[in-house]
Image (cartoon, rainbow, N blue to C red):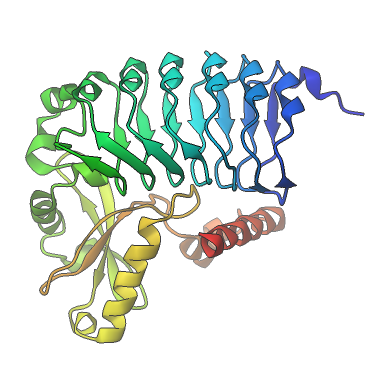
Length: 327
């Protein structure tokens, strides 16, 4: 029988596990990587998880975990990624998380977390991504967040926060990347300067010239847009005639509503949108290698997708549809 006590990597994601998180997993003190995401686990997070002191990666996202975030997680001093997103976690963000000095990614989004953002978060000097969207977090955002000099992604949206939240990115981004201050940064909803970004998209596509069109969908065309800050996005623009049709307008708004609430690595990310009587478009993550349809339509690339690869793709698509269905 396989001995897990010496294991360093344990990936049990994308299964149909139900019930509680086994507390005895905390005895696997050699683990550096633990992924239990995309299951149907319903228990609180066991305090014993704080005993896995070698962990660098912990992903418990997309389950139905309940209860508070245990203070014991502050013992995971080597942790670089903590993803607890898309669960039913309650209570405040433990101030003890500020002790995780190696943390690079912290995702607590889409839970029922309440209370203020603890100022101790400012001690996470290596933090690059902080996602707290869709919770019940209240209070004000502390100006100390300016000190998180490595932060590149920040999302506080859909909470109960008050006060001035216009700084979003730390000051070093505005000093070293003046284009972001001038043109806005659509990579974060809270950094999105709609007016300036809109003008940039129009210029980047030369008012949606056909030479930038990279595909046509059921009710719109997709354009490639490279902004002055060097980032490339895909714009899905509703056709002018279709924009006047109530049915298409409803579909467009439904797509915005659905994708705004989704956070999944296999589902293209929606960064923003424009609703205007002259121009409606969605701002998507740009996929450099194109879609699966494009790959299968090209004989050169299609032969690279053997049957085993195609079966795995089908499995992932099935998991993704299940995720979307239960959101």
